[in-house]
Amino acid sequence: MVHNRQFYGKTVEMRVKMNKCPFCESEKIIEFNETEYFQYGADPDGIVLSAPIVVEFCNSCDEKWTDWRSEDSRQKAVETHLATKGIYLCTVCKSVPVDVSDGVDTCGRCLLSQGIT
Image (cartoon, rainbow, N blue to C red):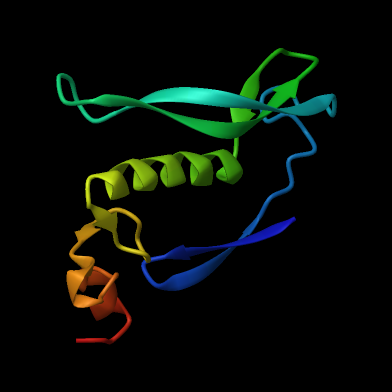
């Protein structure tokens, strides 16, 4: 499976091939969905957010892990939470807050890396 992601304005191709357990190399992998609850921000201002994630589980060694799909879901939960507060993240790097009132949704660093000033 190939998944393209944007990193600082550049498309990176990620090949996802997890047909073996990364811990014991067994092929007895199952996949299931669950809701993950995670802390966003430091106490006392932190908040618990939730995200639907895909978990991969090895029936041989009982290890479990997540991949890019779950990471994307967590990121969307953070972005949705921030949007309720009027805070929007750069659409390229997904980490720097931007002021979208001027119609620009990309941070200065990403604009520079794209050759835009």
